[in-house]
Length: 71
View (tube, rainbow, N blue to C red):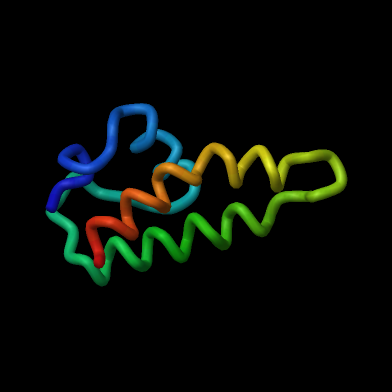
């Protein structure tokens, strides 16, 4: 399934900041890898200045969409 079938343009731009993506169909396993990379990106942020919470809020909908597609 192509990312543009799941996510809007803004979400795809956010994903590309967290992990390398290509314009191709993705399997459920590949989507799970993207989710894992996004989670790693979120946790790499500092909690002291609020970046962790901001990243969590930015990526929350993306993670939820991946979960819906993969389950």
